[in-house]
Image (tube, rainbow, N blue to C red; front, side):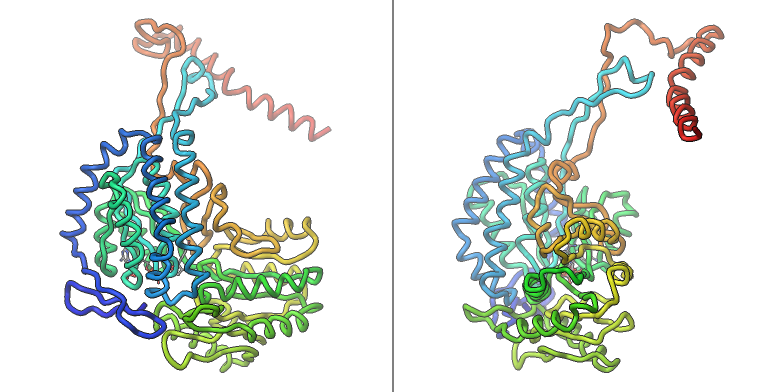
Length: 510
Ligand code: NDP
């Protein structure tokens, strides 16, 4: 969409494909954010005390509401984002799996955990961990997946027992707001709400929350991290990317071409883990480019049903894609498919660029658009070196028929996820962590129990295992003989590791 501020207190949301008005939302100022935060905190206590089983009941009812309303939600999502139907449908259906997964596992993941002792001093203790939810989670999301990126974190946070204050992007606030209406419509406790507005509203949410989950650009993520650092507030950042695809000479080329085309153009390329640059080994480069060009040229673009590639959410993003293509062409690259703005609306034609290198912005900056720059490399070694030559480290794909080789390459890539002979498959793998390396993020989301524990403070609890006496050996008053005995015992216990290591060293020397 394209938003226009109509006054200090309202934003118009327009359809990116034709500029039609879709809706209007308020601009919530700091006071409004704080009021909403206070109400959520009040309700959160009972929510936490209700326990995971009761919370899961509400989460499942909410999921059912979303699925029952998926046609309405998909229409609205298409209108505010310009997505084609299949791209929008993933958000309003498959994303409910995040709710199901955390509803099904909350009780198990939140149970108190017994922990084994280690070391002499903790030996006589019974150790355990208990999880206490952060009272208020601030959830700040971008415009490319207004529902998926919201549910990915709202589901585990609510399941953990937190209240959630969401701040969707000013560009696409409507569908997220409607999904949150659903929470109210099922009569769930008032622990989920949203505020609307731009960066100032987001900054107020950061200040109001106890834990901040931010998804968005690296530039804004850095500002959010600084703000949280000042307040010593925990924050998790899912940021931008420039994901490489590596196509080796033994790849199944038909699959690699289809995967790279879809991975680069799905959602008009506005996916944090889009294929943003491709390195193809010389032996198969010509054939790969010919097939990819053919596939990309065959795709249709538009808002009507049956089209493959939709509009881009913002005109600003079209400008970025256009700049990357024209800068590359000016530096010697060739457009073999697309490379043009659409006649109307926020469209950019699906594009393939060749003769590109790392002096060009299309290979180094996040484009976040429907462009696929392809570079010829000598071999696997050069592909890995160039793939790692980036400030980002979100994810990557590797295409080869040799599984062992694929795993070997994957281990050398400086990224948070590698999909072998596939794209995006880590996205809905809820038992895997999603984390960006380098400038792509800090912390992680999902990842089974970790995805829920991240929304909790962990409390360590110790209890004496044996009946207690008035005082422990290590307590006051100190005496010379007890200190001497304690020193012997501690040295013996601590040195066990040392003597084992010395033994190992002797083995090595033999
Ligand atoms: P932005 O960083 O511009 O905005 C993200 C969110 O932060 C929006 O809701 C925005 O509000 C809000 N915001 C802006 N300023 C502040 C502030 N000072 N304090 C708090 N919140 C603020 O990102 P985009 O919306 O442009 O999203 C695209 C980016 O998101 C890309 O870089 C993409 O790679 C990344 N992304 C990362 C993902 C991941 O999982 N790693 C997934 C999806 C996207 P408003 O929009 O209203 O200004």
